Amino acid sequence: MHQVCRKYQGLHWEPPRDKGMEANLRALVNVDVQGNPQPMHADTLAVAFEARSHPKLVGEITCSSLVLRQKSLQYACQAMSAPREIACFLEAGIIESLTMAGRDQDNEVRHGFPSP
Image 1 (spheres, rainbow, N blue to C red):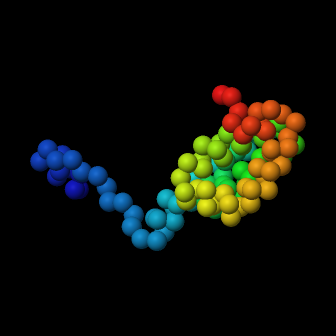
Image 2: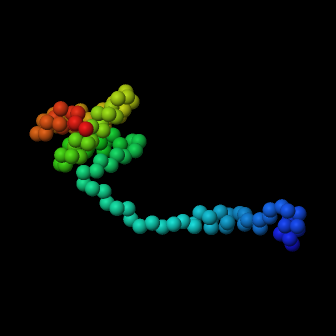
């Protein structure tokens, strides 16, 4: 009946929406499921966020993959431009990792600044 009256008056009308917890739960549960993500390549630098990023980068500076060592060292050198970042890297133990990187056989890792 409301729809007919509104149409006669020239006004737009929509049916009332469900309200309450059941309607909210139906909206929350209505999700799309996606398949597993594609695996990353072995030489891809996956940077973590916040508190986990510094220990992960420090660990990857001394990993077995040369390409990953170069990328992680380059990223760490760029990230250490701020004093707060330097403090976080020091807390994560970058001194030992840089010492080991200084003894590396690769010139780019040993110098600390890989060429782009």
